[in-house]
Image 1 (cartoon, rainbow, N blue to C red):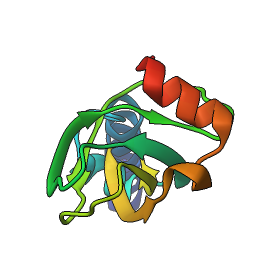
Image 2 (tube, rainbow, N blue to C red):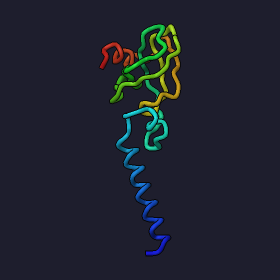
Image 3 (spheres, rainbow, N blue to C red):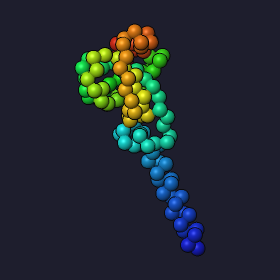
Image 4 (tube, helix red, strand yellow):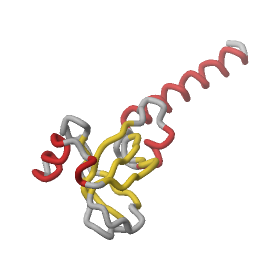
Length: 116
């Protein structure tokens, strides 16, 4: 077997290992999710205690009130609002925007209150 074929085989194996790790590593930690090209950014609503700086294990829901299948931890930087919009990819949160209660859709607000 030539050197070129061996190099191609090694590269193909490394790509397969990396792809498998990204696929099965989703929603495990924010650092893997941050660079995972298999995940897309989404915007979801959260409810947090007023004045929170670091929010841990919070429920996130979409516009229709459907919950994401994991809990999210992020920095809220001491906002007085109890609702917010996060832009995230898996567990990695890119941004947090504080929102007033009336800015959150009714279905999302109901789902957050129920804590589903």
